[in-house]
Image 1: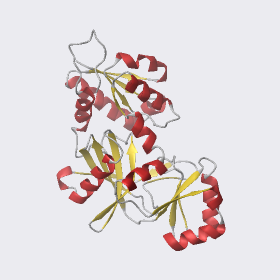
Image 2: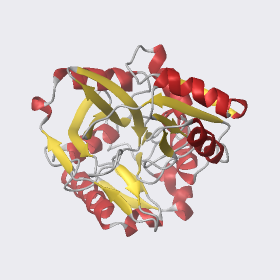
Image 3: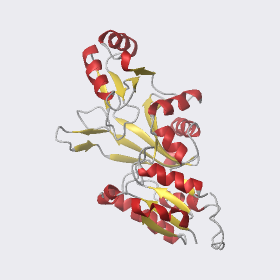
Image 4: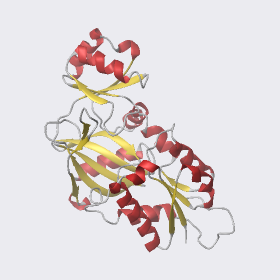
Amino acid sequence: MGRIGIYVERHTISNSDEMNALMRFAQSARKLGHSADYLFRPDMYKIPEYDAIFIRALTDPLNSTYVASRMAQLNGLRVIDDPDSIFICCDKVNMYHHLSRAGVPIPMTEFIQTEDVNLEYGKLLLERFGAPMVLKAPNSSFSLYVDRVYTPEEFVKVGNKFLRRADRIVIQNFIKSDFDWRVGILAEKVLYVCQYTIPKKHWKIHTYTAEGRSIYGPVVGVAIEKAPPGLLETALKATRAIGNGLYGVDLKQNGDDFVVIEVNDNPTIIGGDEDQKSSNLYEEVVRFLMEGIKANDRNGSNSSG
């Protein structure tokens, strides 16, 4: 029997959809003969007492989640997400460099700095990328600080806003679609496939009203065996460029070709959405976390993953 610590934060368990999935993870752990406890920030000192840590809170190198991940790694525990994956995926510039070096297809991409945000350069970029073009802050998540611009004036306005939270901006060409593919992968194994539908009258999968209300379209599950082979091959190639953890790969489809929009560490897993066609994904995560654990050797040091 192994012990899994599920690291969460208050906002994680306050979301009923998130909590539904967390309960399924815990149930799967018990079904396989393991225990699972929820750990909060004040419980971080308990991490060395566990065999593995599963982080289910917003990851960022500046958040407590990174500290928890690093502590688990230093104590020889298998951890999702591992510190390297957090460090790479939470900086889109770093992530796109990894994907490009590995030959993974991505949108036409350029990185700009403060001195590039002006009307003249905005005009040159729009001529090169076409209108609209997409601007992203490198540390954006949940579609926040991701916007599209049609004119040099919009480029300067959005660019200056994004530079208040980052010293670089990602520029990409806009790829129109009705949905984004999401492929969930763990240790080079496909866990689930789904489509994130783009809401009507919007251009990205997750957007917000002026009052801050979240808007997103329905999630459509796809059986792994029915997913386009090129989709899975491209997604797997993308995760190999990052690491060996749990990732959610977002892709756009253009005919028979696929382009990786980004690789997410700590991908969303909500009961009734990502698991529609892959109900065994919870057990797969538990098995990965528990690989190599010597359940009968609880008097010695924790075994590494």
